[in-house]
Amino acid sequence: MTGLPVLDDAYIPELPNYYKGKVRDNYDLADGSRVIIATDRLSAFDRILTAIPYKGRVLTQTARYWFEATGDICPNHVISYPHPNVVIGKRLEILPVEIVVRGYLAGTTSTSILTKYKAGERTMYGVTLPDGMRDNEKLPEAIITPTTKAFDGGHDAPLSADEILSQQLLTKEQWDTVSAYALALFKFGQERAAERGLILADTKYEFGIDADGKIFVADEIHTPDSSRYWMADSYQAALDSGTRPASFDKDFIRSWVAERCDPYNDEIPAIPAELVEQASAVYIDAFERITGQSFDRSTGGVALADIRESLKHLF
Image 1: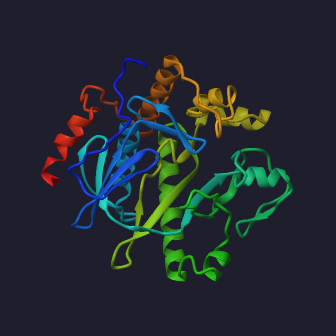
Image 2: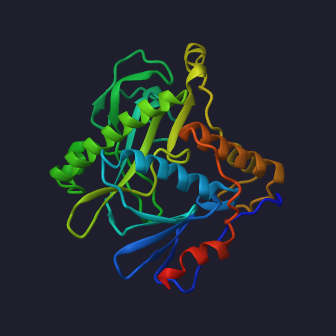
């Protein structure tokens, strides 16, 4: 334990239609809205590793910063923020395609363009990249690399625009709309990040439709969990040396666990308090650098009782 308060559970029995996600607890209300409470749970390897103080608040408030700044670019799901960890949003049918926008040849997962590029692929996601590119080099232009959205716990799979349409995952109108929204959001995000001394290298978006078929961006946007940010002043030297630019490194807990067990099958060892506190500091630093705002620790309020009080009008 760190001694710092954490919100590791947000079950409120007075609210209806409870659904527990990996890090967010959700309630669907009769009026067509959804209460989304961001806990401090840290998820990796398809399980919960620990809770990071202030993590839920950082993600909610970072997304709020971007939602409020981009409302004229793309409609979003937000109705209100009754608490720093809580958003009440429109209940949407999430589209079955995850939209990832990339501005750089980067990534480590099997679906990342750098992994595929280093394996010799040049055409991927319906896009052809030139030969001779270096790790983390800026792409000629931002590209969309969509994947299937594995709702059932399966693995995401790469898609092209042609496959999205031929498999009828989206209509052409939906694909055109989502693509335009995603590229416009990413362009704005990159420009705003550059003003803060950051490079927004890539990010993912989730889009959903309401009962009338209108498309909204949902979940979170441009947070340190959904996006890859680099420190701009580290980029050129890293590119020249073939190393990764400095970033908000939150993966040290994941790495610490993986070095000590098979995280998919073994019991997770107790994570040292100093690592948890370090991760909390990284999240807070990310919020402050991304938004240019000071993070407010004074409001306490990560206690479930405070969240419950903020939602009493819904009971």
